Amino acid sequence: MTAEAVDTSSPDVSDPTAVVDDCELFLASPTATLVARDVIAQDNTMPLAEAARRGTALLTESAWDLTARERACGGPLLVGAAPFDPGAPTRLTVARDIHWGPPLVRANYAAATAVPRAVRVDLVPWPARYMAGVERAVARIAGLSQHKVVLSRAIDVITAEPTRVRDVVRSLLSGEPDAYVFAVPVGTVRAGARRVLVGASPELVIRRIGRSVLSNPLAGSAPRSADPVEDRRRAWKLQHSPKDLLEHRIVVDAVTQALRPFCAALDVPDRPSVIRTSRMWHLSTKVRGVLADPLPNALELAAALHPTPAVCGWPTAVARQVIAESETFDRQYYTGLTGWMNESGDGEWVLALRCAELADTQLRLYAGAGVVSGSDPASELAETTAKFHTFLAAIGLEDAVATTSSAEVVRR
Picture 1 (cartoon, helix red, strand yellow):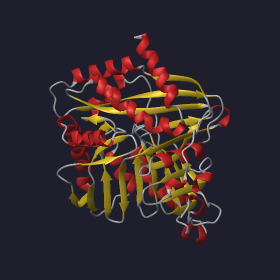
Picture 2 (cartoon, one colour):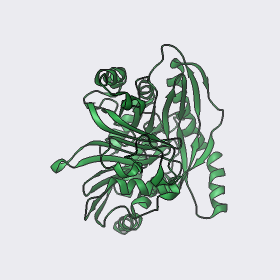
Picture 3 (spheres, rainbow, N blue to C red):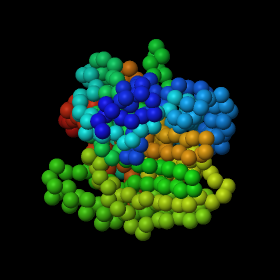
Picture 4 (cartoon, rainbow, N blue to C red):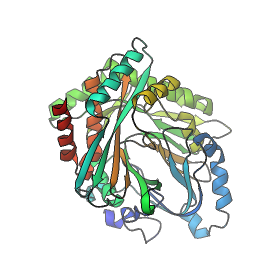
C-alpha cells in the first residue's frame, strides 16, 4: 500500500499527511495512523492531574450529539499536549472528525529539505555554557548513586519563508521508520499563526487498551556510526555501560513504582534491550501490566508517570531544582506528552522528544541528556548533538548548525 492509498475511514483523507497543517493531532505510530480534526470542545486551563480526572467527562459532555457515522469512524477523541511542567495548563481538544489508518509505508515519503533557507541560527545555550551546567550538576549529585538530572539545550532558527508542517512530517516519516511521528498545535503567535509541536519520538509513555497497559521507557543512549562494525560495537558498549545501565534502572524503577498501584499484575524485564533510531542507540525496557479495578483512564496513567526520570531526573524535586538553575529557557512542551484518549478511557501518550516548535518563520529545536554521578560534560554535549541530528537531517539544516557550532569553538 502506498502513502497515496492509505485506507482511512473517510475518502477525503487519502494521504493523512496532506491535512497535517490543519489538524488537531497527527500521530503516525508503528501500529496505526491517526488524524483528528474538527474541534467541538477545548480546555487549555487545567493542569495535567485535573485534566486526567476530567478528561472522560469533557469527552462525554461535548459529544452527545455526534452522528452514528462520526462514532463509527472512532469519534470523539480527546487529543492534545501536556507541557513538561505538570502544573502548567494542558492543551486538550475534543475532535469529532477522526480518521484511523494502518501504519504508513514510510519509504514512500521521499526525504526532502523541508525548511526554507535559514537566515539565523542561535544555540541556547552555547556548548561551553551547556558543559559548564553539566559540570555543576555532576558536582551537585557527586557520590549519590541513585540521583539523575536531565539537562537540555535548544537551537533557534529563523527562516526566510514560513515552514510547512506537512513537509517536516513527511521528512521525519522518511528518516525515522519506527518512531512516533506527531504534530499537534500548542498555541498561536503573531498574526494568529499556529504554533505546532512536531517531532519523531522513540518513546511510548503509556498505551492502555482495556485492562492491558504498556510503558516503554528509554534511558541511556549512544550515537550511531555509519560504519557497521563500529555501530555494533557502540550498541554492545551501551548495553554493558555501568553509567547507562544505572541511568536506565533509575527510570524503570520509577515507572514500575508509579504503575504498581494501578495494576493487578506487572511484568518488568530484568535487563534492558537495545533499540535503534536513525541516529541513536537506546536502552529500552517494555513494562507490561494488567489493570485492576477501578480502571484508570489512559490520561490518568500518563499523569501518574509524568515527568519520568527519563526526561526530568530522580528524585524529581531535586532534578527539577537543578533544571531550573541550569537551563536558560522554558522547555514548554518539549519532554511533555502528546496523544489521544477515547470515551472508554483507552489511549496512547508519547513523550515529546526529537521535536521542535514551529511558528511561521521561527523554529525551536530541543535535545537533552541524562546526567548521573561521574558523567562527562563533553560526552553529554555529544549526546545532545547526536539527538539534534534526527530533526536537523529532516529539515536540511545540519550544515547550518554545524557552522554555528564551529564558530563557538573559535570563540572559545
